[in-house]
Amino acid sequence: MDAAPPATAAWQAGTGREKITPSDALWMTGYATRDHPAEGTSQELWVKALAVSDPAGHRGVLLTLDLCGVTREISDFVSTELMRRYGLPRSAVMTNVSHTHCSPWLEGSIMGLRIFPPDGIKKAADYRVELQKKMIAAAAAALDSLAPASLAWGEDTADFGINRRENPEKDVPARRAAGTLRGPADPRVPVLAIRDAATGALRGLLFSYACHNTTLSFYQWHGDYAGCAQAELERRHPGATVLFTLGCGADINPNPRGTVALAEQHGRALADAADRALGRPLTAVVGGFASALEDVPLTFATKPSAAELREAAEKDQPNKAMHQAWSAAVTAQLRTMGDAILRYAYPVQAWKVGNLSWAALGGEVVVDYGLRLRAEDKGNLWVFGYSTDVMAYIPSERVLKEGRYEGATSMIPYGRPGPWTPGLEEKIVAKTHELISRTRGQ
Ligand SMILES: [Zn+2]
Image 1 (tube, rainbow, N blue to C red):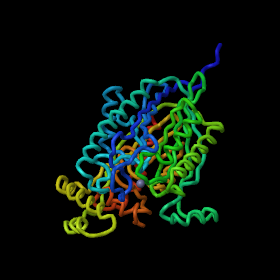
Image 2: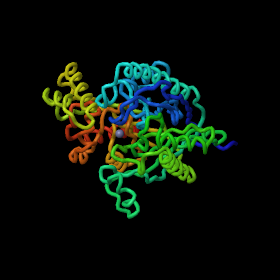
Image 3: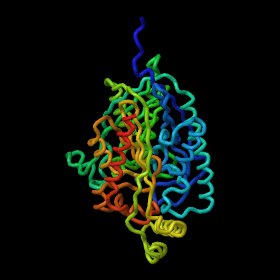
Image 4: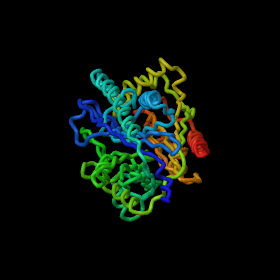
């Protein structure tokens, strides 16, 4: 009698990818100081898809994008089409962006960054339509190529991400050398390996890191360190589709920064971490797939007065174009939404991938969430930020109290009325635990 196949062989996996580098000179995103469109391509941008199907045929598809942000409208549009074509529930489609700042500004995103000229807005609208098609095509390719696979995970670390609120950029080399870096950071690099069930060949690799993808600030399209890490791992593992998900790294920066060579250096550091994890015994994924997605009702604490909006539009100050854009965006929202401007439906998503769980949180999530959720969880949990809808920074209660950029002033580029109302951390953490627990019970 033949030996029974390993339990993990009952899973299936498939991958897909589409190039999403703009073919046109679109406006770039990420930095309010940008004052003209992109000048060219230094590295291609990609949407990649990983589809999984458990032994009972329950499927999910993860889309990772070399983009700075994604809107709820785009994530929902793509999910609706996949629901129609493949019968996937909304919660079984997960989107995560790498937050590269060398990517196009997306229509409807980060509305206080700058008032873009009409032709820039038109090109962004056209790009969005193409982007959605490519996201659907990548997901379809992944779902259509589902084949028996073994899934297994491990973890290693990388240390180029430092807490940017507690360490002035120029002080980092000395503090790093002296071992005196301050503030929380999360060096963990979780890795999921997808191997062909028959041959053992590596077909897919997913890895994550909690650090702003902002080594670069030039006017070229580029995936930054995350793009370099993916490219490096795909070079080292021919035939594998390598996907990156960004963790809770909103207050973490890579260091040092500024050149493509440094982005490549950080990329190699991450690739090395992933390969170290792959070189050790991994834990096999065993069990079924389940998913959940719900919105947490959050509120903004304050809305500006008409006088404050007028002053922002007129005052001579640094980043004047950003303040003008914030004023225009908030004024427009107040006109159409009134007091509803103070409410926001914040998405929390959970996946059970056998004995592994993923939480995917919307927005630019600070490191406290990743550390806390994993410390409190009783199972095997990975936490991604920058998922479904990147609508603002998501400070922890600590960071909200401290204020500054991640706690308060980043609401200006994001075109939001004011800081979040205290209490958001408990609401988000409670909902995440609830959804993780619910999916584990399925
Ligand atoms: Zn950011």
